[in-house]
Length: 341
Image 1 (cartoon, one colour):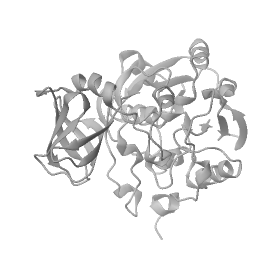
Image 2: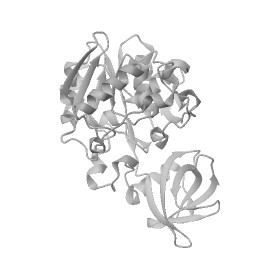
Image 3: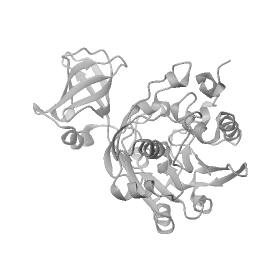
Image 4: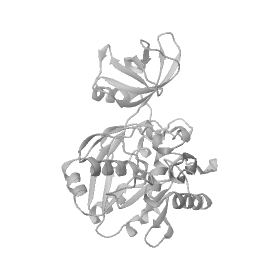
C-alpha cells in the first residue's frame, strides 16, 4: 500500500457547487476567516478584519505585489473563425506562451481589436502555444504589449467562476498593494485586505514584498496517480534586497498566500533572488522557512491543496476542509480564508 500522502486520490473532496464564490465579499475584509492553531490543535471561526488579533507578536508578513494583467483576448483568424487567447507567461522578450481556444496551427495569424495581431509559432505538448504579438505590424516586446492589452483585454477570471468578467473585477480581482504587472491569476489570499487593514498591518508588524507572477498552471489539477510524478509549473519571481534580508533572518514569517510561500521556500533552498520557481510543497516536502500561512480554500487534487497539507498534514487538511464545508465557508479565488498558525 503506497503512502496515502503521495496518492493524488487522497486529496479529493466533494464541494457543493453553491459554495464556489463567484463574486467577492463586500467589503473585502468581511470574508470569513478560519483560524487553526497547530500547537494547541484549536480552531476559531472569525471575520477576516480580525486577523490582526491572531498574528503572533514579532511575526513578519510577506506579501506578493504582482499585478494581474488583462490576459484574456477575444479575436478571430484571418479566415474569420473566432478564437479566445489566454496569455500565460513570456518565454523571452518577444515570444509569449499562451493558451488558445479554437483550432490553430503554426503560421496562423490571429487578429484582435486596436490593430493587434499574433502569429502562432509553435504548438507545445501541454496544449499551450508560442506566439509573437505585433501592433501595426511592429513586433512587440512583452512590456510593450501590456498597455495594448490593458485597453482591449479582459480580466482572466478562473474557469470555475463560470461567468464573463465585469467592471467590478477590474478592481476586486487585484490586491490593494498590486504593483508589478505580469500575473494571469490573482494571489487570492491578498484579496481580503482593504487599504485600511493593510496600512494597519504595516504600522504594527514587520512586512516585506516580493513578486511572483502567477501563471495559469496554478489551476492545473494533478493528473498523475502519484503526486510526485506531477510536472510542477514554473513562475517568474523577484525578491528585492530588503525582503532577502528578512528571509535570511530568524524572524518568524507569515506568508500571505501560496504564491508568497512558494517563493520564500524556493529562495530558502536555492538562495537565488530571482528566476523561475517550480517548487512543489506537499507533506513529504514541507516548508523549511515559512512559519505561518494565510490562504484561501482550494480545488480538490490541486498542488495548492497539497501545499496546505505540507503545513498540517493530509488528515488535518481534509478535516479542516470538511468543517469549512459544514460551516458554509465560500471556496476558491473570491472565497473565504484560512490562517494556519
